[in-house]
Length: 153
Image (cartoon, one colour):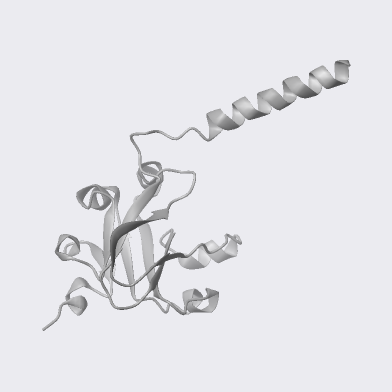
């Protein structure tokens, strides 16, 4: 009987601890919106400034599909750490946009459509809403290839 009570107390403690650890601040962003105005489906993922470190530590790739001509702002999850918390510590996050036939080899070979290198100020200026191809709001932000490449003649 004592073992059952102890087990229940420990189980309850574990659930309370998880709730505290997983508490998300309602004033911070754990998602950002993506609008795809191109004619192709794209895949998006976020990494630190050096993608190879992502693989060195064995982190899984979690591509987020955004269908062509999607203007309903598909949400791309950012994980358990808010973007504000991450960017206060690391200053920049890279948001990669890949073609629809993406796999890990594509990432490692740097076969991207665009990489946005965003700071917290950039995310705030964009109201946590990104666009592919980049729109006018994004022209002064650091990206590769540069914004001018995406402008139609």
